[in-house]
Every structure is written in structure tokens, then in C-alpha cells.
Image (tube, rainbow, N blue to C red; front, top):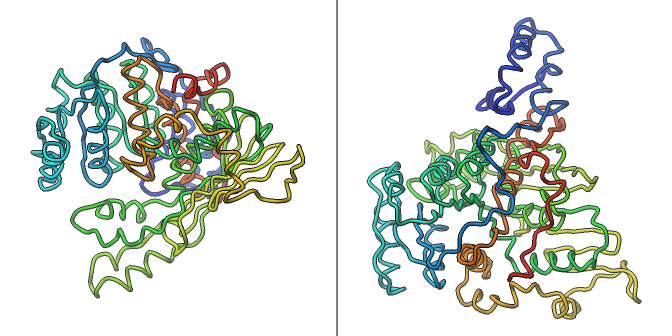
Length: 482
């Protein structure tokens, strides 16, 4: 029988605006389930993408934000919501970038808020930003201000969408941590709000700004790998220790996602760069995907070994697989494997593999194989053997900002380059490198994977958030204006 995760209603996976059209089908589905008919899975599967329309009409008055340019800003007036591990880093790095004015900071955990305010004043010698944090909704009072241009959101996952939507509706540009959303409806909500308000809504996929990822993007543009055929992406990161964060910190809220959800829960760090290599939403698009997961053991074992008898975390029943593997097919026929594992004792990896008709790049460790011009694709170039390729194909953005990025840090400098690039584009009236369509397409992998896992790996169609514009959009150009 066709099943959905218990916290997802069937209606939550309908394309918004199509609910009336599906009413009769839903009534029929309910009748079949009530009667115990074996055909229930076929009736419901259409709603989830197996033959269902994934095109949503643009609401009246909305217009595309593809290539959105806003008037150049001499100074970018910034507010930050959430200054824990990620947000505090954003505050420090933004304070190092010319043209940024830190106007306000919001966090409802007072010690964290005070620490970030003091950091701005003492370490960066700036005027103290106004503090907001009476409760979890105090950010709305901050958004009433007219002297804020953009808002950076680094809060728990469940807060991203409402805060980004409220920011755009108040006239601000929204920059949110990953994932941008984790339901299909919320992905559409971000897209529709950005189009209605004509404000930027960018998911801050920092890995797109790593040195290696920028290098590969430039090599793809230069034709080094030929026609792209296959990619592999992952987020493999042993984060079981976060379960020890009980009252505050990432583990205090993220742990419960592992209890409720079973799918590819955090896909974008590995997938974002591969999507850019393959011109997703700019000449190609995700078409459909399948997803399967292993059994779940590691988190329960960790809880049993690290918490005393009777502790709440020993009683949790974890739904998430220890390893999820998803396969995406693109409109052009390419394939992408996306893996997620935050549970198993294993070294960190994002895989970052790209294979084309002329050769292959594989990360962790970095190595490359090419054929032609005296090279054999049966041998890896690695270590010092990669230096000539870096010398020839280093991305202009890293050439310009690499040394400063290393000094300012943030995952090897990628965080700083990302923030610098955002501010640079806003100050120069340029389109951002990532837009709301990218954030939605990369994030929607999570709910589609959950639906696929719950239904024995059935394929799920991707919504077309660009509404067909992917066919005519030019590839990302973050080189000529770097």
C-alpha cells in the first residue's frame, strides 16, 4: 500500500493551486483505503509525481526573478537573525567586508545575542547594532525598520521559510541558511514570494564557493571534461555528538528531525556545486528521482552508550536511515547520485565526483583522470600532479579573494567568499550567483526523497520552479564580473 511519512499529509505534496482539481481523486483514494483496496497506491502515487503535473502557474501580478538585478547600493545595511554557530560567523565575516553596515541582530537566546553584539563592538570596532530577542517573533519588530536592506537567517530549519517570507514581504532581501525549506509547499512559497516582491531570496550554499568547487566549475566552462554525463554528491558527516546538545545548540532541535523523518535530509552541500557544474535551472533541470535508505541503528546505539538510564534521548525512536542514497535524472539525461549519512563512524566526504566524455574529477581525496594529449584516463592525477590544472584553471573569484578568504576563515574561506560575493553583487547591481529557483530545486530533494523512501523507492517528479525558463536561461556567469 502507498504510504507517506506520518507527519506529511497528502495535500502537502500537491502542487499549490491544484487542490480543487484533485478533490475527486482524493475522495476516491480515501474510499479505496477505507475499503482496503490494493489499488490505493496507484491512486495516490499520481499526486506525488508519478504522472502528475509539476508545473504551477505563476500567480497574477508575479514575475520572474531569474537574473534579478536591483539598484546598486553604496552601502548594504544588514540584519542577522540567529547568531549561534553559523550566524555568529556570518556577523564576524560581514564586519570584515567593505560597504556593510551591521544594523541589527536578533536571537532569543540572550547570552548568544549579547556575545555577538559585543563581538561587533569590541573585535570589529563598529557601532553596536540594535538587539532584538524578547521572544521567537521579535524579528518581526526588527523587520518593521526601514533602514535594513537585507536579512541573513541562520536559525533552526523550521524557521527558515517564515522568516524569509516575512523579510521579503517587508521589502528586504532574504539570505537563508540551508536547507531553504523542507516541504514542497514551502519551496513554492519562497518562489512565489520572491516573484511577488521582486526581492532576492538566496539559500547560502557556501560549498559552491570552495576553491575546489570553483576550480571544477571553471574547468567545466573550459570544456576540460567534455560533455557531462554523471555526478556524485554527498553529505557524509558523523554528527552523532550533537545529540549531547540538550538545552541549546544544533542538537537541541536537529535531533528531532532524525526521529520524525526518513530521507535525504541534508542534500545541498554536495548537490549545489554539482548542480552548478551541470547548469541546472540554466539549460538543464532535475526531472525525477528515486531514494532508498538503510536500516536505522547508529543513533540509538550512540544514545544507549552516552546517556544514563531513563534519559529522554535513550527513549527516542529514530526514523532516519543510517545511509540514504538518492538518484536524480535530469532533463538532458544526466544522472546524479546524492548520499546522506550523519550517523555512521566514517571520515567526512561530499564525494564531489564529476564524470564526462573526456575525463573525471573525484574528491576526498582530490584526483582527476583525463584522456587525450598523451594522458590516460586509467591513471589519477593527484597531489602535486594537480598543480598545473590549478595554475591554468583557477577560478577568477578565488584568484581575487582567495588569500583574504583564508585570513577570514569559515570552512577554509568558502563562507567569506560567499558573503563577499553577495555584498559585491548588491553593491554593483549584479544578479546573484544563486537564486530562489536554485534554493528550491536543491532543497526539494529532501521531501521528495522522504516520499520515495516511504514508497519503496518509487520515482518522484521534480516541480519546475522556473516554470519552463530553465530551457532558455544562460549558464551561470560568476567569472567575467568577478
